[in-house]
Amino acid sequence: MSNYVKKNIWLVGTGLMGIEYCKVLQSLDVPFEVIGRGTESAKKFESRSGIVPKTGGMAEYLRNSISIPEHAIVAVSVEQLASVAIQILETGVKKVLVEKPGGLTTKEIESVAQIAKRKNAEVFVAYNRRFYSSVFKAEDIIHEDGGVTSFHFEFTEWSHIIEGLQKAQGVKENWFYVNSTHVLDLAFFLGGKPKKIASFTSGGTSWHPHASVFTGAGVSESGALFSYQANWEAPGRWGVEILTKKHRLILRPLEKLQVQNVGDLEVKPIPIDDELDIKFKPGLYREVKSFLNDDQSRFLTIYDHVRSFSFYETINPFQKN
Image 1 (cartoon, rainbow, N blue to C red):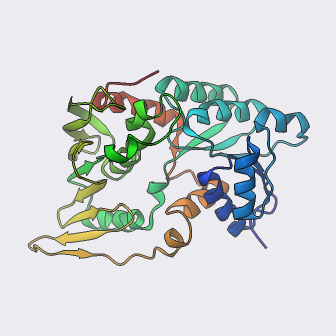
Image 2: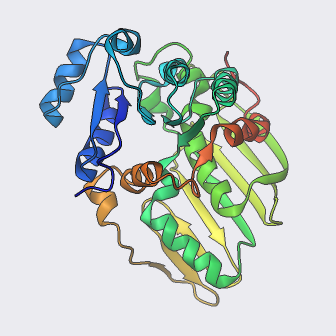
Image 3: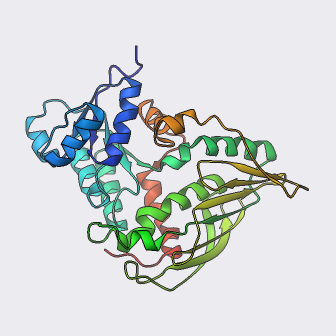
């Protein structure tokens, strides 16, 4: 019997991420209700999951709802994340997992944090890369080696692909916050939050006009030096490299781990138990299980997320409100 039979959960959102969350919840054998807006996405959701969502959005659902769960997962499109999270918090739900980045702008994310504080609720931002098998393994090696001495990360985006995407107004203009922070969150999760940082930008694209090239360096709260770069108009890919006194740990792609030993030029893949990251969207199974078990040890709270914008806005000082 599932450990979660006494829980009831709202899963809000019937898009691609909603389907991925649904797979995990079904596997965990936890009772949940799916709430969406449009009938078209609801039909697609049903065909892929076998579950019929409630349609009409949260407002319509709440008119007929008689019970409020303790947990809710918000997996709507990015421009709706903050407003739906606030709707849910206002109902009295005490634990909310909201898809990254929790809102389209700093102002929206701050609003979620304010409501959460007023309602005495907990809100976590679903940066699922913290839960990758590769990251758990990297942490083990970092601990054995005595900590991180320096790290480097790259958050290059593929402009030639993004330019043609159909997104709501403001999404592509805020792509750094909407998408690139996935890499930054992981890098600073492993290497430590910035204490000091110097940043430079140049260029721009038709969809992100203020900057397309980013570089900088700093020192983390743990004393590790770090650097970063991204060029959205040149070839590249996401990656994080962590250096210890014994190893260079390479997460590129982030789902895999390679290692270079001191005194050795060869870079070798590290075997990891990534069965769950193959069966489900990487990181999502462990993330949802931790959320339902009220294990907060790896999560980014909405309050820490607000604080992180102090250095995000140094790296990318251009935000469209």
